[in-house]
Length: 368
Ligand SMILES: [Ca+2]
Ligand SMILES: [Ca+2]
Ligand SMILES: [Ca+2]
Image 1 (cartoon, rainbow, N blue to C red):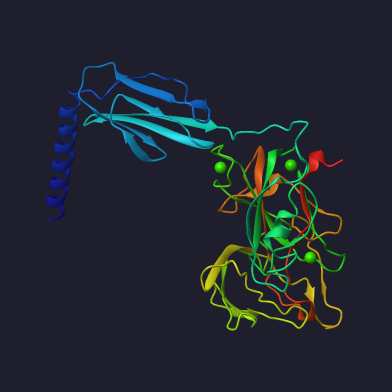
Image 2: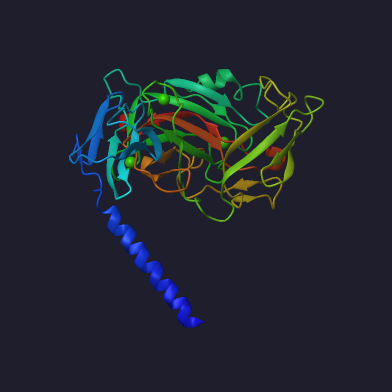
């Protein structure tokens, strides 16, 4: 029985080998690439043309893949990068005898708007003000007018409870200077009372002047520590009546309220929100720095570094600490847009909810 099995296996191997020998009669494609450099520096909106030709007269199929997706099965392929980044173009030619592949890596630098004598050190554009509910919302410093108040100068805007944010733009690209901080975010913290907010940055990858590109979180001292979570979200529900506490539920199944107090009698739910609820998404920071043991003297210790409304005198931010959606460091040459978002969900008794305030955002290289 065993011998029979060996014989069968031997026959199988021999027949496979002879099949291979037969195929060798037809050669594999031999290909000449029109562009022989594998590393290519591309430019935004500039067309790149690729071609491949056979130097032996055999039949074969071919394909061009852009980042894994087939884009052409012809001899040529044209590609125009519409945003900055790294692209992979893989060419493959194949028949029954073999496969030829060639891989291009195309790097397209982010566009840079240079500093001019007219450049403002402060942010010059407000793109979005989307605060979470809070005691100052729907009046100063928690309305659109307050948000506009930090454009081109110092002012004061509050972002409400966890997740509330503001999106701002510079009139030039803030360059990521090597080995030093690049942006300063002013707030109103005191030595024992921080209301930390997370900072996000964006390059204008498609050069259209709008923050419709990729946000990168700027990792601070609490990144990855206990109590820090990414891809977290909270849904706030319109209260009934308007002036009641605001119920919320988070992406982990927890629920809570943004409590109201007697000092602020207006609705804490942003009046310009159309629906009965809205969801804010981001990263959450630990609330371990808050000490409520003495209810009449509540404190909130600042984190070591890397957050808004955290350290008295202004928080200096290094673009080099930016991380991608997987938490991996990214190397950005500079940034055009910034987002600041309240990072902690906490009720601080008679002081109301913890909410990040922003009193100014400036390019540190232009601060005199
Ligand atoms: Ca830097
Ligand atoms: Ca853009
Ligand atoms: Ca504050």
